[in-house]
Image (cartoon, chains in turn yellow, blue):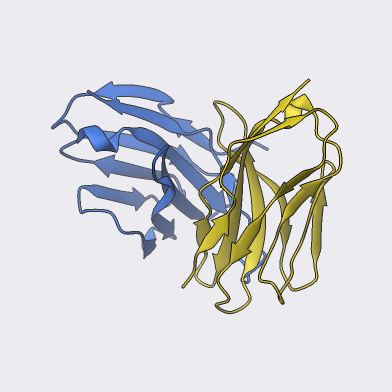
Length: 111
Length: 115
């Protein structure tokens, strides 16, 4: 299969807390992996990506490492801010330019 | 460089009507994909167009159709609207490249409400 599974939300954290959002993918080939973020009222924006095993994507303090052995691409941030409140989507890209998205995880950061 | 532009941003229709949504991709992007986003189903892939040809198709009924023009602009059409078609319709464009290099750039979406 070509599925992506991410942890269900909603997630509520206090400012400066550590964030982890889990994402796993079915091991069909070696897809590229992505995290997208959707702020209220907007479309999705690319947050970070990794195209091969052991790659680490990073952006705006967020990181995710492509782990082939656990078929995972967990999103982490050491210290979240109120402005990080959004919905986060894990996604995989197969050959043929077909993206598969997880169901999204809503994050709310409270001051 | 302008982003992906979708029009209209909001629209309200009644059951049985049809609707056409438009998407202008980033200049130079030849691939355009459409997604339906609902609270219950999340992001579901509708179809992808490349060089005026539908290259991939999701699992939606024939009431959902699309096309792409020679300038890469794309439209999607939904006929005989149902209440369940109420959703945010997202368009995304990407450069054609080797697998793994492609990144989808999304528009802000067209929010359709069916009454």
